[in-house]
Length: 525
Image (cartoon, rainbow, N blue to C red; front, side, top):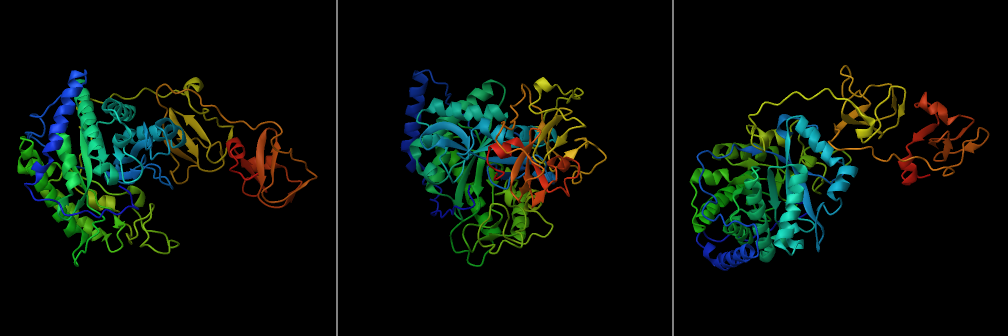
């Protein structure tokens, strides 16, 4: 799923054309037998897959969040009830031939923890009662199944991500070349089946959603093949999430909501057919519970396709009436009106929708009436947490001290939580309950995680910058050092000590700099 990629899908085949996929069923069976003989862990749960349950899972809403997009979207602090659950995207291969998970081919999981505070932000969201699904794939980069040439290596790659983020649900967004590659599709199906079986045996079941592009007539040939491969391998699909966007067809004056309803109805019928072909028939209501919808809000990649708030209201009503299993949207990063400086809203932005939303959000509109969590609710009582104590030896950042000065971007630990300074501050307690969040100089990043130890704090190397001299003239942009701290001149100055910047930063000609900005060259010194 990518706001810059258009999906022009061919018409889906008729309801009885699935038998053309039988060679892949044969291939799947042979591959499974080979794995079992070799000591593989795949269990062929053919007859158990997709059976109608006495009670289908409660439907849920969760918007996608592009983890690596800038500006970053602070999913850890939900703005409204409907944004409490999120689908984090996208985990892909680090390189086209590298079977190593990454976020957007830009951050390893460890790098995402360090540079994006991702692990801590997920923990913060969970503190607030929300949860996450991890989405693998997307339109850009390479899905792991295409990069990994070995089924078990692929299973381990998926499992590493599932275990790291402790998720009970995953989303497989398969598009473009990753979708047309049937061999990679078989690897994906076998690896997911093995992982699902492994998790089930350990008492930690894993829900699997398959996200696929659609035409108005439903899934494409490749999409139907992907579903069949999953069912033949024994994957218990939670459902198929249809990307109701970028149709690339003449709308004929009809709304995007109408086209989407037609596509979703077709997907429902195709799922009934797919499960019947797999000899595991499901009821009509169960088929609807296995259908998901994900529109691209606002301006789509196809110029004439705009999904407005009226479309969102209509699709929400349809989803509730038909009891769809899930509704999502691409993306929460875009859920706002573009600013006045954004000249042409027909150009798709990662940071705004391209339509005038006023005070209304697509998340609240599409998510209205969906109250379930993305994961099963626990009936066990939640114990009160122990009183937090800040141990410097177990804190990733220095423990806040009332007499210390903190520059913008500085991170501290206070009462078991990591905070980041929004601007220069001294003496302001990070968790002061009497100060509104907008007025506090601190913003919550998330809790201190188990097993953390102090991170190396950069210090200014000796002689890196010239020492301030009261008789020298400094122009804007000049950098100096004084008593181990770095400063940058904001305008012409002579005789003004940089030390005064800590007392009255608003009027001082000097701006304090953190050592990492100087060392990394960000200050322009």
